Length: 468
Image (tube, rainbow, N blue to C red; front, side):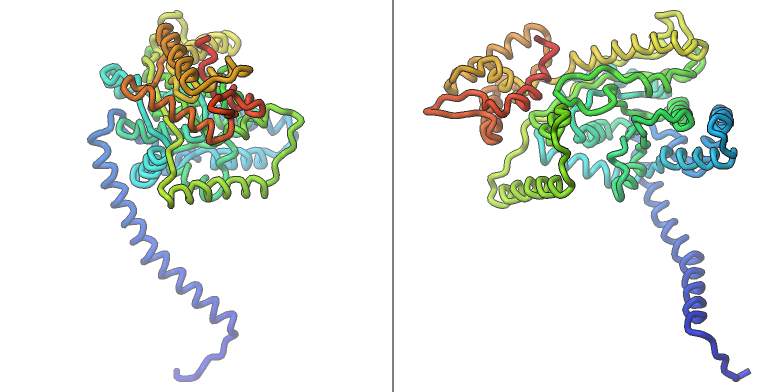
């Protein structure tokens, strides 16, 4: 019994590894899970008492259960079989693709991360960079929405800051589930977004199997009452104007909608605008087909330089916010009332007829968004500089033209966001911002638009395009 046993070093390390893994799995991992689960439950108990739209059981279901439910959905299986025959591949290979798509799409919502980390981060980042304002919101109308309905915020897409801005503004009412594009599929951003309830979309994919999996997930989430946020344009505005509405996600939501028996789907149009978007030059550059593609080194160098300059300004107490970020909430539009008004049942319509009606609904939503996009100081100053681009004006003349344009837009019902008391200061701040970015030429106290900055001035002025 006291004899020694000689073993190889690699066997010893293997035994130590197995022992360590057993201790970790049986003792430490369950303890850690219990610790975080308790924190999540505390957040759920706290948040559940004050949210207007509660967190749905669907969002708290284990992710693997949702993936299995999606993989074995009858319509997904039918499409998978057809796809396997058309592509001449074994069903097992087609099913493996379905599993890959499902894992890519289905989020892993975590209430603690959403309300304790993401909300704090979004709120502080938005307030650090901008003066955040909500101009139009009817709290009574929003409170009157049936809490059992599926609420969908429909927005224009000006900047990637939209995700932060809307998430923190509605966090006191509900959680939001976004459709995020391929740009966000990088670690650790992908993990964080999935934990906040976002699902990923391959926007340019025409693969019928992928589109079916995506459709069924959106249908499931909508059917279960998950509150969602949709950028109706399908992507960022490149020139500052609203893009035509994309029907895909809205059609997925309505494709199986039975107005009289399903929970109602309530669309809330939201208009967003900024005095400055960080992507403005990059977005305008994409409009030039001859523009040379920027290298990763150039992007890294430019981004690092921008951050460094602002940190230095902050350190010397000379840093200023990038103007206003403003949001307007329009009147809700009920899918049930829409279908009643048109005397239709979306679930029984063929594709062409349904798409025609979905197009009408999306046009109505886009018109509501358009009429609620805030008119901000930089857009006003940029419009004036472009209207008189060949003339030199002094500071007083620029402000006089801006005030005249403000009055003209207000008379047409435009949501001009400039405080009455601070109008002069707001316009001065916007003008100074454009001068700081070298978009304005100055000579002997006179100013005019910089010829090389016409495109970017047009980008901001185009936020008012629909009011002209």
